[in-house]
Image (cartoon, rainbow, N blue to C red; front, side, top):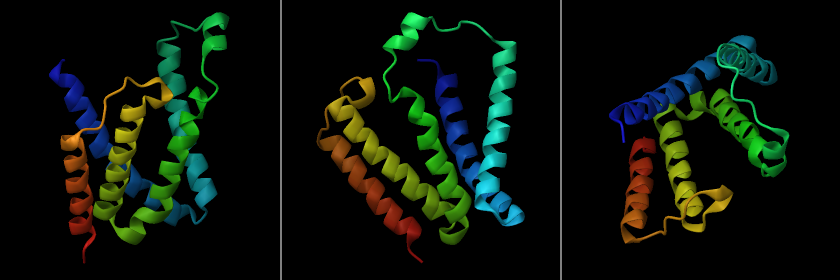
Length: 147
């Protein structure tokens, strides 16, 4: 696999942390959490509309859309929960504990998704090393969140 893929994933993780802090400031500046969410998602929408205008193909066929699982478009709502949490909570607990908790929760959920193959993911069974890694992550969260 190309190393640029991992670099982009790392960049995405770093920017996610910055985004949570930026959204928290947006909330504090606008004083309305719902307006802050609208502003945040409007920018995301305009960005991807611009990208789509540049790269308009391929477009799905009706037959492919008919095969799409009912839950596939709900990923955006799941992302909205994360944005809302960052917007309203990161300044209360700090960026370190917030990211540690969200990353660890995401890791634990990813182990379940992999193990059971939920959402059409390839199955990767939970093993002792994955469990040990998860335990270390949970311990790490405790250390990061300790005051």
